[in-house]
Image 1 (tube, rainbow, N blue to C red):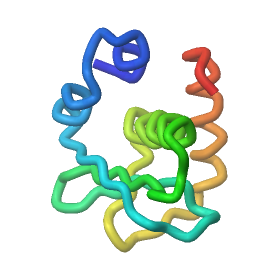
Image 2: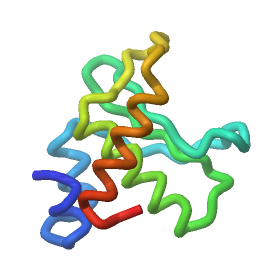
Image 3: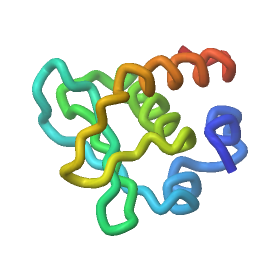
Length: 100
């Protein structure tokens, strides 16, 4: 089960989240942060900026799911110095799925 299945409507968003032990939250975040994913207590928490419009939320959601598939989840409270590298990898991954 992967993002391609979700994009192709082979699975639902809930099925994908359940399979990946993930939850989706919408929170007011600083304007420069569209979304993020963290791992806490073995749960992947995807947080999307509540200030975004519907289309932007969809793109950010798929972007964050790509981090999940590429194992770019961060343990709660631990920052990673490779974030630019991870962002580039996600862009390449989504491009291969013909989604950007």
